[in-house]
Image (cartoon, rainbow, N blue to C red):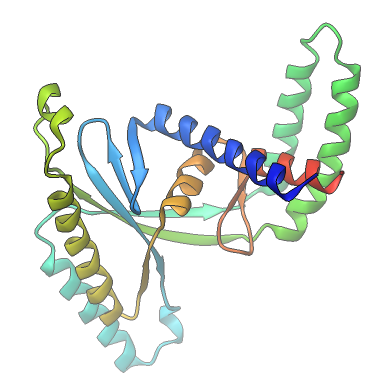
Length: 228
């Protein structure tokens, strides 16, 4: 397969994942590292790397607590702090995925070829997941900005989007700077990372060693490319 065709297929898959995330989560668009929801809400997402508190000295622990309190005290807007344990019980999840897929395939009139293809894919997928899945605890901070009226006519205007984005950026950068003082490395997720994150909640996926989510669609694509 040519590099151009591979790129086109990858883009097609990316578009399908975005469409699924948008429809399920009432997202208007994801652009400029920002989520815009259908009700006009803007949001950015920070991925956090938190130090192992127990390994810090007493002085460092006190500085971390003080820095975190300073960040909380600085907030004049709501935030959402989320934690997610990834790749827990992978073997059980794989078994459920296999059972559900096989049950779905058997509903077809002619399913033998499809079952054979799935058996080959599942063998590859099981080995791939075992090599690449990384079990860990992930932390995120969602920072919203609510600039719009809930009137549909107002939502259509969106004339002041640049101004609203700038205000969200100010909130986001302020949190990144203050969290750094608490020894917490906060990174704003890019457009692609946001799509990957939200798609991972809707599709069978696992967190990989590269620091992103491999969805089942991603894995099918990789399997097809490797098989050619």
